[in-house]
Image 1 (cartoon, rainbow, N blue to C red):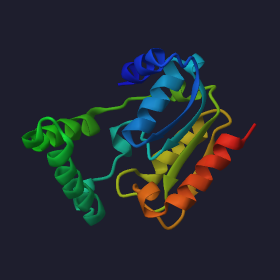
Image 2: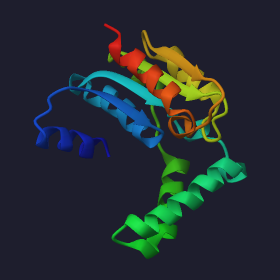
Image 3: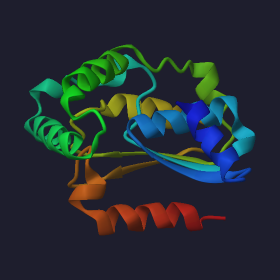
Image 4: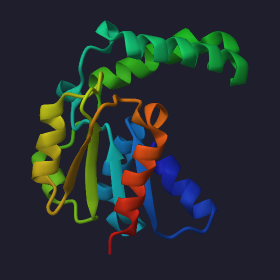
Length: 171
């Protein structure tokens, strides 16, 4: 997936960019920071995990279940394969159970200015994994957004955007 982001950047003639990623997108951002640091100016990684042990059992979360129901409805409306949401969900669930696997050395090697961000009520990511990543990445900031969950940008977009803009405005 990181290759897809880099390919898109190439197609758009973007040599370097700040990357803002949510969940799997944040994992992609970390992957790029590890393997292609020359392509990033900074990374805002919201709700990422460093390995599968950092993920909670989302099946126990009513908020996450509601999100999956919403995603199923939107998938049926927007996808060119509207009847294949279950297969998509099965595949992404396998990915969540098996990826990523960032090592301590890889995380310590990140030189891109990075904020590891999560929510204080995240249904999917274990707080100790957020703390772990922020503690290993040299100079990383750690921000825990209060009163929101894995879906903070939907629950309180003004607050989320203010935090993001603060990060992007830093020298």
